[in-house]
Image 1 (cartoon, rainbow, N blue to C red):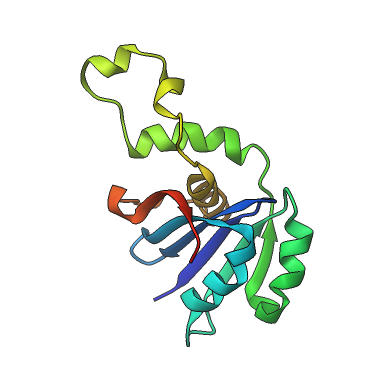
Image 2 (cartoon, rainbow, N blue to C red):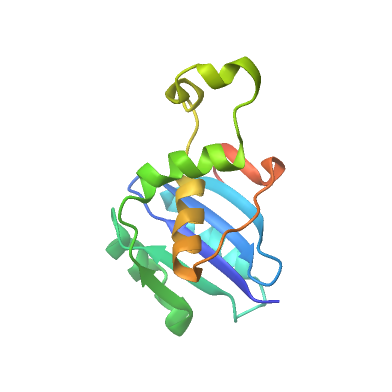
Length: 146
């Protein structure tokens, strides 16, 4: 099983995805406070030292790359241009609007939703050039402290 962790770094919060490449499935998707990034990465990696970690090169990535230096060769810095914008589109691919709501402006459905985990998914999909399946029960739409 080849697993990847993808990170959309930010100053206050980070989107984090754990995905399996063979099955093209997202196993975990969370948005966490940035100060808990290293702790969560260590927990997700556990005993498997072969998990590859991708981090976007955007906001505060240099700081996060330094704190993740223990990953050594398993850490890859990738381009994340326009991922925040593209995560909106990807969100509606995963969770399509149905019924009469389709006629309402899409932006009203994005209020109070943290798209950072979806941005991390976009980073992963761009890097591997394929789409992953994300179930709604794997997506945490609120900040998590652990």
